[in-house]
Length: 373
Image (tube, rainbow, N blue to C red):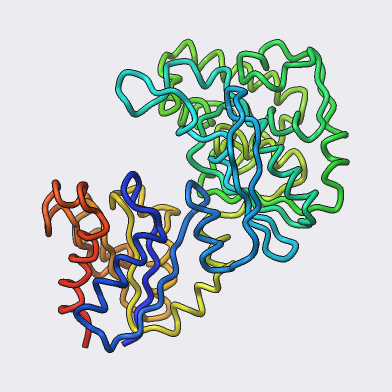
């Protein structure tokens, strides 16, 4: 058999590359005669650059940019020909913010002063390196500034001078804005915002109200203030663009990219096109995907649902591995997944978290005995 192994990351334990290697290794133990093709996947969030580099090759270019709170942070972008791939989380991700008492979400209110300035610097570095198309993966951000920092890094001018670089707290005092220098900086460059999020910038479905709590904007008053600041920003920039699909992605970073003439593409589709995934699916007998937690979010715009959507029309069965599975068999099949296998059920929670690579390989080894001819 020919097997395609195309998982997302198992958040907190394995990168997509590590997960694909573990599944392939375990499968070959049971079915050494099968041809296993490993193609790690991503939807625009953390791991976006590594996944594309593993499939496309190209050159990884290191850079030091401004982190969300003004500190220097290391970042890497991929240059493949004249196309650059950037992972916004490297410059403004949740992992770069101090965590609160729960150990999972940032200190309450810190996102109110966090900036996307470093993402703009990465875009500028990519253009200076020769990129004529820049694809920015959106996901895992810790910011909520509407992309204002990004615009400032590319030359946008505001009054007061620092209104664009201090998060929504600073945006609240914005009185004037000129985006033309930033647009001129990117003249002739195609911008793509790669994200599975299609929320607008403002309102009940906007960046602040939907995603703010996971960034530490937990109080109603904090979210009201941040949304009001973004409204001030949008009124001076372009209110119509604020309603576009994806403007609210990554705390409004999508809005900043759209203001510069960028287009939004679903993150999964961007990666799938880059690695030639439809042709790969059509050329195998079985498709394997997976992620850390398989739940209802996995069924909408994520890697798992994307693989299933490609496998169905190609008449190829699709199965999934996950740390935990929280969707029933009937629902899985309705979404194109023949079966899902949970590591915590098959090897135990302690082993799954303590030795994730070995555990995933062991699960794959056992499942291969069922699926390999």
